[in-house]
Image 1 (tube, helix red, strand yellow):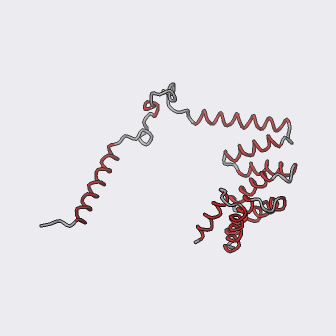
Image 2: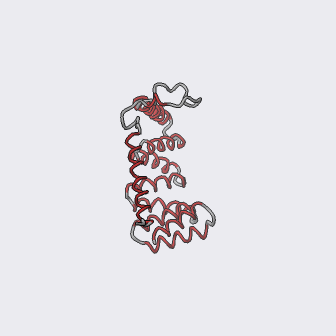
Length: 197
């Protein structure tokens, strides 16, 4: 009796799966099993001195709190320092506090309403909050200062798509590609158009 190649391939594949499952069960998982990662640190120059394992959340939390206090203190000394305001706003974004970040970005925008970088950051925050009206308002402020700003035009396309106007979004992204050939933003616009299909 001759075996068909299909059966041979299926048996081989089944054997392969059994072997993978066997080794997956056999393998030690120090993180999942609650093992001590510090005992498994490589003995090289980079990991030398890390015998106690990774720093705990408490140490990171304390460093975070100290950094936040330092930034707040600097802002209290000079509340109109746009560099410190931006640094604190970015810190709040990293801390997953977009509303707090937005508060400081708005302060900068009041002091210097033509700061395109700040308006773009505000657009991003409004967008992740789902406030498309405010995101579009910030984008239009950027475009009033620079009609061909690549990122602002790309963002406007995203906003139009989210508002349900796919034709307008495509039209905007096509102009981004035409006006910025060979750039990263043109590639993003092309990918956005391709994603619509």
